[in-house]
Each structure stands twice: as structure tokens, then as C-alpha cells.
Image 1 (tube, rainbow, N blue to C red):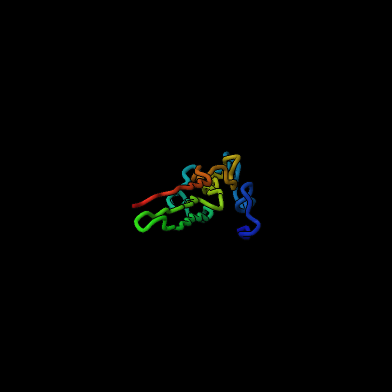
Image 2 (tube, one colour):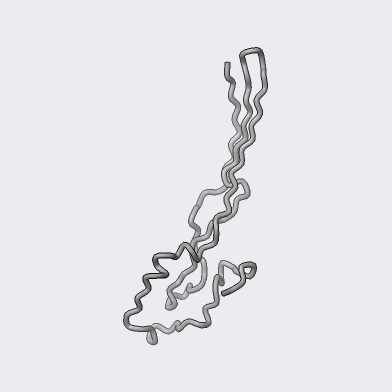
Amino acid sequence: MIPYADRAVGRWFHTSGFERDPGKQLESNLRTFPLRLTGLRADGWNNWDLSLYKTFSLTERAKLQLRAEAVDALNHAHFSGPNTAPTNTLFGTVNGTIWSEQRKITVAARITF
């Protein structure tokens, strides 16, 4: 296992201990465990949603509320799990993202009376 700090998208785990030649693979490889729990190998979620608001009194009955909301405020990428097929040329690499959304910032004003 590669230490967490040394992981990269191009090399998620050590691939040197696996037989990569398709001609030397077993005839029937039963791989139920990795297929069911591929999410355990993926990187964790790092998603920060922030919201700020301030309410001002305009008159005795009217109020103004200013809001700022940010979805995925730090704009971190969410990568899919690594490729676990030893005969694939992308074995041991992460080659996709789970969530294509990027940072969204909304600024709004609301008047209540």
C-alpha cells in the first residue's frame, strides 16, 4: 500500500505484485469482494458548503436580508475508485471523477414586511 501522502491519480497503489499478462491469468477468477466494495478504495469526500446571512431592519416592519451561499466552497475534486482490473492498461490509476459539479456561489437579497 502506498502511504496516503504519496498517492497520486496516476498511481493509487503498488501494481508490481500483480500478474498483468492476460495469458497467465486464471480461467475463472471470482472477484466478488472487490466489485462489491470498490468505494472503500476511493478517496474520501471533502465537501464544504458555506452560508452567510445578515438581516437589517429598514423600518419598523420591513427587513432586508442579504445572503451568500457557496456549494463546494473549496472546490475539491471527487475522484472515483482506482481501476482494479490487472489486465487493463490503466490498472492502479484513477481515471474519473464521481461528481462533476464545481463551486457554485449564490448572492441574494430578500425584503420582508
